[in-house]
Image 1 (cartoon, rainbow, N blue to C red):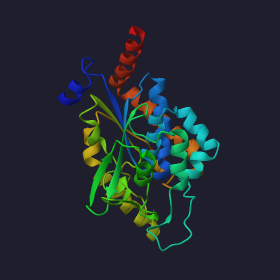
Image 2 (cartoon, helix red, strand yellow):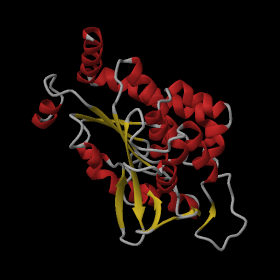
Image 3 (cartoon, helix red, strand yellow):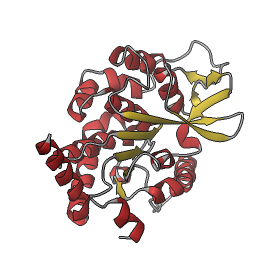
Image 4 (cartoon, rainbow, N blue to C red):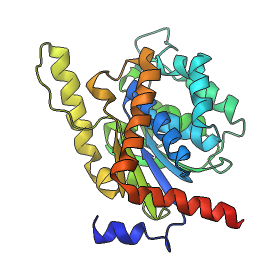
Length: 284
């Protein structure tokens, strides 16, 4: 571990734990498994940053849902329908073939206040501004549903979200691991990347080449954020599934849980965070 990481992870400074959840479509169900493993080890992040699917899972966690409750949402067909690209527009002559009505309604159902400030945990949502060609971090105001929807607006699939500052789409387009926004507020940052770099064995179809090219681009724009994480957990679900494998949510969840649990074994210093949290609770 580097000197910087040792300093940030020292018990004296370890007051705020942040977690960065990367985008990845259905592969993002692994985030739920990681969160469950963290909680099983006594670690409860207070700040969340996310792009795309990471923003959706992050928002649910910030609202106050437990990982088990998120899984139940999928089983109840609520979160599952949100992630299966279901609210299709009546016309193809808009900025996307689908809108985020179902997702936005779910957010407002779970958080009627629709406010960043009233969330149980601090949330940072990454979006991509097509007008400025830069990513932006949204973390305040009474339009939580709007910015979570924008962060998950896959270009060409979902409609872009219009705002006075421009058109906004998927945060993963320009920054799939937005850990930058956690640096000032968190002494320890845990990153979860569900699209780690995987070398393709064979590219049989043009769609294979396209998929791997997009993953490489996302990996590249994730490098800075990955480097800011003191602990980085990578789900291997990408080796067996892809971004639209929504039917495999239970198995992808288990991939995330297993990856985090294995990470604890290989990085015992992460366990100290759980021990510190437990000690603090005992002192209260």
